[in-house]
Length: 353
Image 1: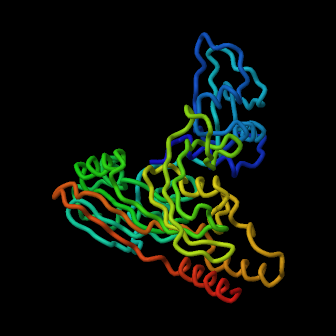
Image 2 (image 1 turned 180 degrees about the vertical axis):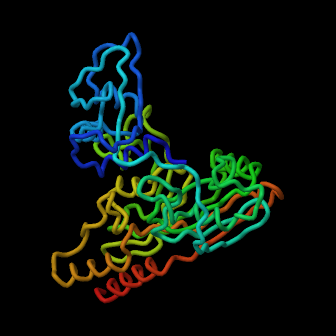
């Protein structure tokens, strides 16, 4: 379930300056303690809202949407004891109730306790700011609408893990609380088996290896993650990679995850100097390797159009069935856009030899 802070973080990108509080909705309300020392309101909110950047708070204040006692204040306003600080927005808070929607699903496996679905690229997993419908969760609510034990609004059932909107591939969904508990424990204890196929810029050296680091939120851009060199900051992450095929200026890799951190593969590949092809968030949507010739530039631009997203696919998923104890293993073939992209690079590489 998306948190209020995450929704606010995304929503603040759309704020336009406003001098009037008419038509605004309260999203955050914080009452300063009686012992509160004088503190700038942007710092005060930053300290209270874990996933909201100070820059976005300042942007909201400039737009007249940060208020104290019902009146707009600037970022440098000093919060005093018992002040009532609110953040207002031009839209009501997101209604978390999941609405079933008849959206086709590629179901790889299903039984009474769980199902495995192959998510297409471009589909958001869970409703959130700007994506209130058309998500995988809405589709699951429709598919399981006649199942009395499945409540799409209950955190005790549903998605056990997530992948990004523009990542394709396999996800497991629990239809019963017992299944959610068992599968969640397997992910926590790192006993699941997950591998991804991806196309990256350049050729990793060594060809096969392990990337181990702390991953934390980027302080300059809270929508991105980054590697931290502080062992006490962020979360531990381990990615094993294998080079499957080289195409001169790009390479097809397989990654196996020990951990499942936000954007883990994307962050780790960028960290070793090989961002995912066409990964706009992590710098892979420009020509990073190759020549300066117009022919090559035209080829890469055509590749960007062929696969207009980060070239990442959750290919395999393995776990122990929560009821039977049997090992389950599933594979989803590379989707058409990534296959076409890989074929183009292979043809280009062969033509250069």
